[in-house]
Length: 173
Image 1 (cartoon, rainbow, N blue to C red):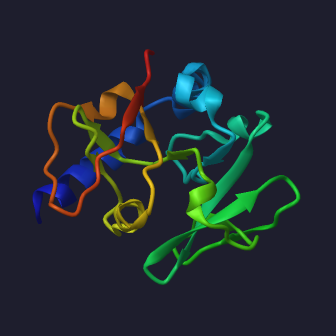
Image 2: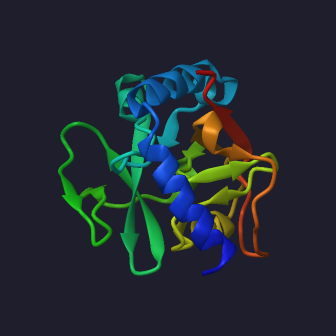
């Protein structure tokens, strides 16, 4: 087992011990206070899985929201509001059934992670979807990663294809 695999297993186990409802509320509050979020009109979120940070209450804000949808090896940017039907993907994650739009419309991309280090490198789930998506963007769009402080670390192993996030939002609980 490589180091990332061991870290993923440990991070998933640690997440199960956290009060993710309180963690999520704290992170939503901090995101809402962040200058970049306040000025963003088009925000890409992620639909939470069990034991993952849940940012869905942000959808109540006066912004346009988008969720990713996986198509083969790519992430598509799909608009979301309460009228959009969600379907479970092959990864058991709810995804919107709306037509994808160009990522150029986005002002902010909120990226999920199991762990994040102080340089912004994240430990994802191992599929590389976000790294491929972010590296293919034609113009730079700010990225933000919400993370419980327990899953923030000094240094994570990363490869040349890993893309660091711009902003890390940690809990203060």
